[in-house]
Each structure stands twice: as structure tokens, then as C-alpha cells.
Amino acid sequence: MIYLVLMESFVDRGNRLGQGKVFGLHPNVFFLGMVSLLTDISSEMIFTLIPFFLCNVLGAAATIVGLVGGVSESSDAILRIFSGWISDKLGKRKLLALLGYGISTLVKPFMYLASTWGVVLAIKFGDRVGKGIRTSPRDVLVADSVSPEERGRGFGLHRAMDTSGAVLGLVIAAIIIYVIQGKGLELGLGTYQWLVLVGVIPAVLAVAVLLVFVREKKLPAGGVDKGGLVSGKLTAGFSRRFHIFLAVMAVFTLGNSSDFFVILRAQNLEVPLVQVVAMLALLNVTYAAVSLPAGMISDRLGRRRVIIAGWFIYAVVYLGFAVASSVWLVWLLFACYGVYYGVAEGVARAFVADLVPEEKRGTAYGLYHGVVGLALLPASLIAGWLWEAVNPAAPFFLGAGLAFMAMLGMTVLVRE
Image 1: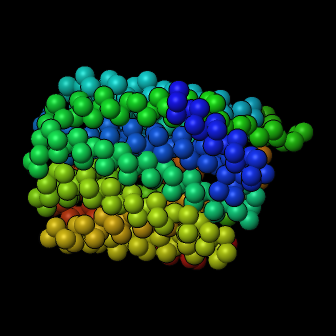
Image 2: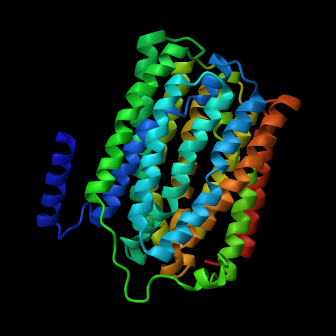
């Protein structure tokens, strides 16, 4: 309650001094960023260490890690498509975002009781259902709250705040791990249960911030999209350029398996658990630091060039993970991996808004997230199989190769 009162005082002061803006942008951008920040604190504490929980506590194989990672990342894909589409029909972005964040918050405490990988999969599935419902409408709320000239900046700020939450979550997790079990290589059950208990608190706060502070933008008369409802065609009304961009994203994502494998690769190279968590924090620090400048650069130079640069960094990082043999190099790769995220993630979302009409943004973000999510399942299953059938480096060679193919497709086929 004290937290919410302070937040309300902050925005009131911003309204008096900055004509209703916070950090030069519509307050929605800041408060949606705060919702993501709090949610990421919670998710990083509870879900990021699932690979260790599966392998170290439950004794699951790498193929199971790939299955859980792939299913959990892909299970929300269809929901992202339809939640965006429904938000276009109803013009109710905030309601769907609230429903999604609420579902994810409700399922998180059950990880305290998880005792089999099937239960972990079910809980992670529930969390992703919530994410599938909320993500597209939330991205539309951000896009609707900024002008085209500041779109990259708006998404960059949102990504930076989101990722700052990940940093805080991982720092808290590292402290808890160090206090309870020191510098051991493997995660203990009691340690993980403490992470769940503490991690639920910011998730509840995130829902409260969304409910109290985020305002729905009223669409102009006739602004709600009815055409797709009559025709039943989700892809109707989109340009050829948007469809090609989705196809290129699918190619890239087929090599971009769940980050569970990046985490397992660090453990495979005998990096202590506390250091792995610290590496993840470093990844998110660089992600947060780069997101806003990358978005602002994309406003000036164009989104396509920035996305291609991000994918190039990704390809080099994945090649590095394939050949890495020393701990110092793993630290460097995690830092550079965060640079990739900061350069490409927010800018890609801003690019989606550039490519589609305003009244169809919900459907467009749904299709974008749906394509990425659906491609993640085969990507993670293939990575799990390559890890066990070939060697732990093989998934990273594949990811680098497909990233170079996507860069070529973006360069040749997609116009700015």
C-alpha cells in the first residue's frame, strides 16, 4: 500500500511539472515498464533457474529441459495471436493485460510444491498462458501511447525497465542462494522454495500497479477493427512486407532455442551456480543499458539496420558459446548476449508498429509473438536432441547459422 501511494505521488508530480509526461513520455510507458519490472523480478527468481531445478533437484535429462522450455515458450503462441485480435475487436487492451498478469501471478506459488517435471511443465504452461493473454495488448498499450517519431524510444524504455527487473530479481536470487548454500555447483530444493516464496511478492505488486495507474487510450470513432471479425482472416489487411518480416523472424527463431540451454552450457563448463546467476544478472544489465539507446538510434537510422546488427551480435555470441572453454569467456559472452537483446528486442516490436495500421496493431503483435512462440518449440526440441545426440556445442552452431540466414533475408527481402 505504501508503495502504491508513493507511485501515485510520483505521477501527480510528473503531471504538474511535465504536462502529464514521465521521462518525456506518456505515463503509460513508464507504468507499463514498472509492471514489467516487477513481473520480471518475480519471474527471474522463480522460473529462470528451472533448468537447474529440473536437472539438479528432479534429475531430469536435457531432452526434458528442451521439452519444458519449448512447450512453455510456445504454449502461449496461439493465445498471443487471439488476445491481440480480440483486443482489436473490443478496444480493451488493459482488461486483457490485467487478466494475463493475474493468471501468471496465481500459478507462481505452486512451484513451491512441484515434485515432478510434469508438474513443473503444467505450472510453466499456466504462467505462459497468462503471458500469452497479456503480451500483445500490453505492447499495443505502449505503441498507442507514443508518436511514430518516439516509438523506438518508448519501446526502448519499456525494455530497459523490464530488464532492470530481471537484474534485480537475479541479484536477489544470488543473495538467497549464497546465504543458504554458498558456492555449490547445484541448486538445492530448500533454496529454490525460498526463491518462490520471495518471488511471489513483486508479482502481486505488478498487478496492482497495472490496475491503478495504466490508462486505456480511447480509439477514435470507427477505430475498432471489425473487418477481421467478419472475414475471419487474421492476416487480412497486412502488407506483404509484414508477412515477409514474420517469415524471416521464424527462420531466426528456429535457431534461437530456449535460453535454458545457455544456462546449462554455463553449468556444463563447470561454472558455480552463484556465478551463473551473476552472469544472468550481467546479461540483463547490458540488456537494460543498451535498450533505450538502441531504440533511439532506430528512430533516426531505421529499425531494419538495427535489427540486423543485433542478429549479427547474436550469431557471434552463439559461436562463442559453441567453442568456449574458459569461465572468463563465458562471462564475456553473457554480457554480449545482453547487448543482442537490447539492440534487437524492443526495436523489432517498434518495427511491427511501423509496418501495420493502428487499428490492427493488436492482431499484428499477436501474429508476431505467435510466430516467434510457435518456432521456439521445434527450436528447443532440436536443441535438446543435438545436446544429447551430438554434443553441447551443436545447438549453438545451428543457432549461429540460422541467424546469418535471417540476416541475409532481412537485408534482401525486407524494405525499411
